[in-house]
Image 1: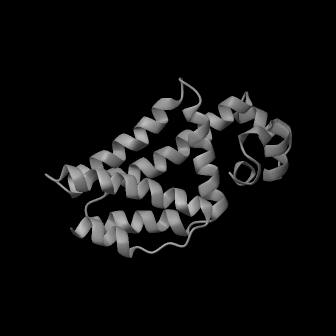
Image 2: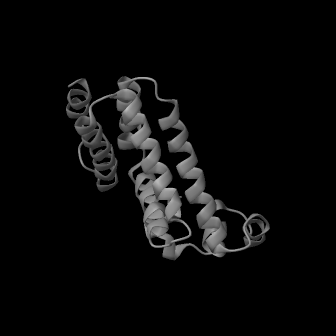
Length: 151
């Protein structure tokens, strides 16, 4: 993820990943038969973790904490996660990963804000925007998100 965050998916080679991990290239080849397989595994792993957190949300406060975690994690990790999502957006066979995130976020919004379609749509847009802002290194304040979901 550090390599993707610093240099993008185009910089990912089995040798570069091995160097970053401090292992011989054969170790990377043992687990991933191609760079594409490695990128898909990284994308799926990232998405699995965030989708699981969205599915487990039980309160608006937990959603604010999730966005706060996204905003406060290492900026390069956030950049890497977005880079992988953009990689998926360019490929028909991977675009489902983007839809999986979007669907999980929309379902979480529906659970947390039942009966208010307008606020749910704003919540989805706000979460996506705040996480993208984290990749840009923008200052983050949970206040506006908290006020949005509080009504």
